[in-house]
Image (cartoon, rainbow, N blue to C red; front, side, top):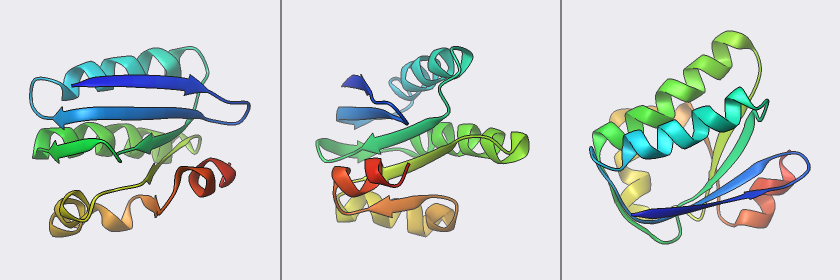
Length: 111
């Protein structure tokens, strides 16, 4: 798994390539927490090149999103989510916690 973070004026784009599992999820969460510590609060997570997400991967995003909600600041949205990954979010009931966009331009434009 690898990820690329691109900073924009109103949000940060995180492109994740490969699998998000119990090994890689903490690395993603650590990177996002470093950006949050640097006053970045809006993230677009592009899953176009992501082949798999485990429950621990979903939980990493849920933890950050809930923290944003509790602090009334920040948001994670997803773009280009493959159907099999979107089904994982739906199965866990987290499709209501996040916004999903078909393309990255729309997701970045949300901010």
